Image 1: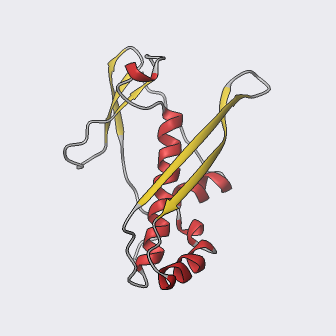
Image 2: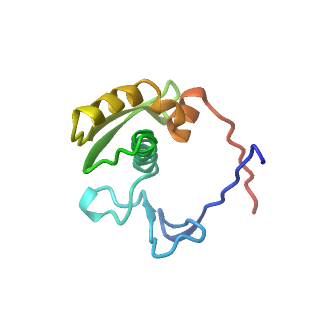
Length: 145
């Protein structure tokens, strides 16, 4: 079994600062990244920073749900929010400073609560996104024109 998994995504400019995302073989997914429209109600897609926050939230939610599922517990409801904090660095460039995540799983029974308490201690380490961001990772860029 290989210790490396590869996945590709892509972008194609639709107009100005709006890009259509290519998520591979996922069907019926029309996702756009929109940095052109400044007003929230005019955007046709999230900013890259919001997409990053959503990735962190989604990954953590799935890790927690998976932990419960290992003992045959299924959530009957879940809500969560992620707040992305963006500040300027010392060179005045905008950077993601932190992401605050709040998760509200619906826990139905004392047995499920006991398992949820166990999961609380280790579910984060299974989230690819949050743990990669915390530890830092390589980003390689090739600009071809």
